[in-house]
Length: 171
Length: 195
Ligand code: SF4
Image 1: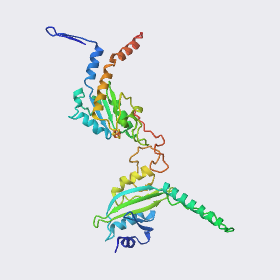
Image 2: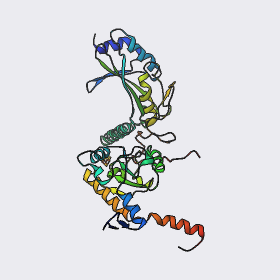
Image 3: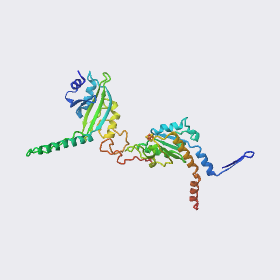
Image 4: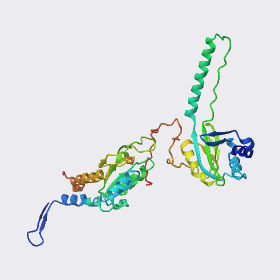
């Protein structure tokens, strides 16, 4: 991105993709979805000591419709699976998912009839955070990784592909 | 009168067994008399077990299996001994070992007047796993009974809402039965949108 202000109002030189990604990665509003002990650690990361708001996760959104990042912190029982899926479906694009803790990643210690063995069977996961529970630093690191990932995104590609398809041209 | 005597006096012939276990007093009563027995225990002056702490179900199948194996072993040993000592001709008819009923339902009672506790137990066979509900006496039995139904498959006759409590509707098994594998039988719950 080039930003110049020699005199007067100045000018900005960038790509649309870049500025979209820049905006998106700097405000990943989380949807805190704490279903077990990991939720406590997530709350800690959101609270004053670790202050996740520093990274743009300013406002934990308790409505899926206004959230960008689903932080799934805790065990997902099979009874909860439809709820999780529905919440994910309710989130508006673009959306990302952080699976926090061993339980969300793989079922953790609960290899039983009632626990979902990893939420990636149900919804797509972008970042896995290992640990039982992961420390708040791990969650912050995951958020930074997610920001990296968002920055490598090509938000306009899909639009272009759709357009090419409608026009019937090679892209 | 000791608590034991008072219970015997109150329930009379319904006492199938009365024993102390780990400091708790257990009384076993016939399955079809459970409601009457609990009512009597609640209303009898001097006992007044008026508070239902919990209702629990127990699957004893693993324990029974172990016991039967031990008994079979003991019998075989006895037979060997008899043969060794030359006792031939004694026709040992094959012993059929009787399996006790598979399930227990245990009602934990507390008397708020005298602060005494009692566990009332009924045996429930696998072929006909049904007990009368005690929600007619204590509404508090509602969820515990549903939990037992959910996990062990014991039905409670007359319960007003006998649905699964922890597992979802349509879950086909009873997961706390000892022959159910820990990792389940692959039951999954799927989302279907109404459209
Ligand atoms: S990973 Fe560990 S701390 Fe996190 S929800 Fe599972 S059991 Fe709890």
